[in-house]
Image 1 (cartoon, rainbow, N blue to C red):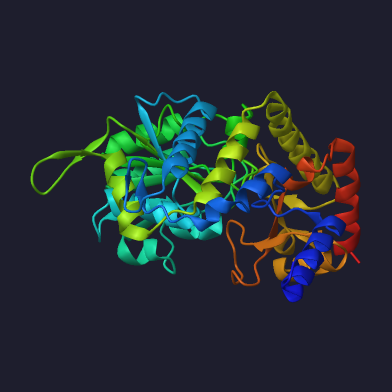
Image 2: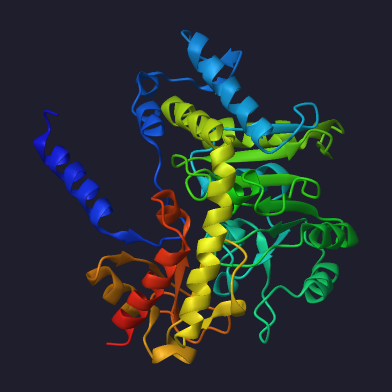
Length: 399
């Protein structure tokens, strides 16, 4: 590499990743094949538009790679191309969610998602996000005692508020979501049901977590978490769902979402990224990935149990996924999430600070940390490694 400054930084980052333990729930390690596709010559090609309808010539192979990526995405989740459409051009999770709102929810209408403190994502209607500024956000949380979703309470809020869209699926909620109950809630108030499965998409693909597709109208996901792909996003939508246009025409959700992605939000897609997504989707369809997904959850359960034995409060009492929330302050050792994450990083363990239900502190220095087992499971970690890791974390935080 001629640029020695960047080459040095790349090597330093490679070394950092090798020598640290990553427990960031939204990170993973991609294969060499994914990296090769990401760094391919597809990065040179501008492909504004969709397959068969581009604005520039020279699209023979970009069309093929995008269509292949769509085919693999639908196949991985067992979806019929006659019933479901998938947009693979969204650059990441936040713009994917924004595209869905722009497509289906008029400005100023209500969207209903989980509050940030309880495990929701910024793009589920938080006030600092465009989703909380362009739309009227109604938020729900977890039961303050059980720290799990209270579906009856959510239903009461939905019926009272009558949101245009309800969002299920979270960034810091460790339990299985009952999508059937969310469908019933959405039907009770006439809302569109969108599921953001960014965190557990790989677990769904691996058969280790319930699929949302039977109940959702729209499903969004990033690719770089449990799905173990590059930074990117997918938007799935039912072909039979429609909205009436101002002219009285029925337009499918799929067409509306495609138009919201391009030209609504983006120009030309990143074809190198899409080719890398296609590689990751093929990898996730292999039998070995099912073993991986199950091991991710086994590891998370053991890590949560061992930390709990050592006296740490685990939010909701445990986990059903790759994700664990630990209260380090209110019911822990009086250590803020920021201090805890700093202490762990100094000892080579990478986590993120995180708010917890009933939070009393600032999001910049909250009461907890979030842990995830997807990355270390990719590196081959098993249950015995989680037992050792829990003891190490405990030792570092109780110094």
